[in-house]
Image (tube, rainbow, N blue to C red):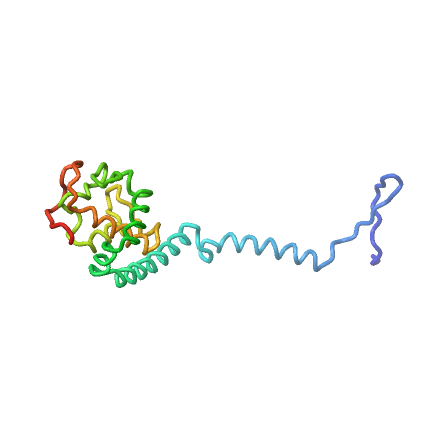
Length: 187
């Protein structure tokens, strides 16, 4: 047998075809891709994170960072700062504008309560202090329509809304019936 390529019997338009085998490197690459494909499919559940696992990892990372941010925000806000800001017309004005844009559907424009509690009476549903109001606005209330605005607004806006909300206490505008514990008006 010779190394000359074998001429096939058939022809098309007078052209005959040689029966040349594929080069060895091409055949090796072909079989390597098949082996790789089976190995990839077989091992991928153990080597590659599923989208659900990746999501859970990202959510855990976000939650850890969120806790650190909340602690940092809480350190920067105090009862004294909120009291000072409640007497600053610029901060209260900013808080009133944000309140009008975001809080009116639940608390009404004057704060007498609709879905949310009446903010103008001498009762407070969550805590008793200005800082409790800030914490409620920032973190929301689980199981109620009160959103965690701290996740949607910068900390300065949350402080401004809290400062404005504290100025409403004691105006006693008729509205939703009292909820929570009786408190004194802020000075």
